[in-house]
Length: 279
Length: 217
Image (cartoon, rainbow over all chains, first blue to last red; front, side):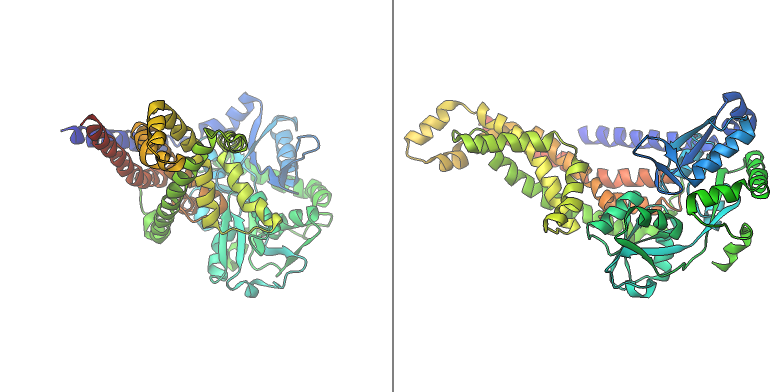
C-alpha cells in the first residue's frame, strides 16, 4: 500500500499548513504597536511606498526615502518621540501593506491608501489627510481622452489597489492588466503593452513629471480619500494620528509640506469621511 | 478557514488553472526539443556550434527567470518584436528550462558507451541517425529522473506569469487577495499546483520503472 502511505503523508503536510495558518491568525493583539511600545523601542516603523514619486519614493541619487507621506511620518515621529529621525521606513506595495501591518512588521501604513468600507473591516483608518481621484495617464499622441474611450483597450494598474475595482465597475469593457507595482504598470505603458495607466491622479502626476512624453486625461472620475491605517483595534495610535493631523493642519505645517511637494495651495479644508458616500 | 473568496473569484481561478496548464504544456514540449538540440550542439565537434551551445546554457541558466521574462515582455517591443503574453511565457519558460534540460541530456549522451556510437557509425548510419536511433533512446532512460525535476520546476515557475499580468493561477490569487485573507487563498493555490505536479511526479516515476524493466530484459 505504497500509495496510501503517500496520500496520508500529503494530507498531514496540508493539515500542518492549515494549522500554522490558523494559529498565526489568532494572535490579533496590537500590543507590538502600542504607543508605549513604540516609545520603548525608540522609533516608529512606518510602511510607505518606495516607488511612488511625490508620496514615497527612493531617490536614486542619495538612496533616501522622500515624499509627502514620508515628511508627514517624520513630523509624526517628532511629535511622538521628539525627533524626526526616529522613524524607520519599510517598503510596502498595495499588495503587501495590510499583511505587513497585521504581522506587526510596521506600526502604520502611510502609502496612498484609499479609505473604503471593505478595508475598514481589516484595518482602522485615521482621519483623511489627502483627497485624490482616479484618472488616466496616456502617451502624448494617444487618442484616449476619457474613460469612455477605453472600450477594448488595455489599461494597466497596480495589484491590490482600489483602481482595479473601480475600473471593472466603471469601464467593464476595458481590458485591465494588473502589475506588481506602479513602476511595472508604467513600464507596460512606455513599452506599448498597454495604452493607459489608471490610478489616483496624485500618483499619475508624479509619473508624468518624470516622463514628459506622457499626459493625464479624463479628469477625476472617482474620489480617493487617503487615510493612515493602523492595526484593527489600535484606537490609541489612531487617536494620536487624528490629533497629529489636526495639529499640523492648524499650525500650517500641512500647507508647507503640501506646497513643497505639489507646488500648489492645499484645499480650504481637509475632506471628511463623508466624501466616501459620494463614491 | 474561510474559502468564501471562491464565490467571487471562481471564474478567475478556473481561467488561471487552464492558462497555467496551457503554458506549461507548450513550454514543456518546446523545452524538451530545444534542450536536445542544445545538448547536441554542446558535444558537437563543430566548434562554433559547441560555443553557441555553451553560451546558451551558461547565459540562460545563470540569469534569473524574472529578468528573462521581463526582457522578452518589456524589452523586445523596443526592437520591434511584440510577443503576446502567452508567447512570452511559453517561450521564456521553455528557453530557461531548456538550458537545464540540455545539461541533463548532455550528461545522458556522454554516459552512453562510446562503442555504441562507433558500432552504429561503422554499420552505416550517419551521425543524426545514430543519435536518434541508438544514442538518445539509451540516454533518455538514464535521465528520466532529472528531466522529471525540470518539468515539475517548469510548472511551478509558470507562476512568474502573474508578474506580467498573465492571468495564471497566481494572478487569480493576487486578484482575490485584495479583499480576502491571503492564507486560505495561498493554501488553495498550493493545492491547485499540487494537482498539476503530483500527477507529473507519478508519471515520471511510472516511466522510470517501466523503462528500467525494459532495460533489464
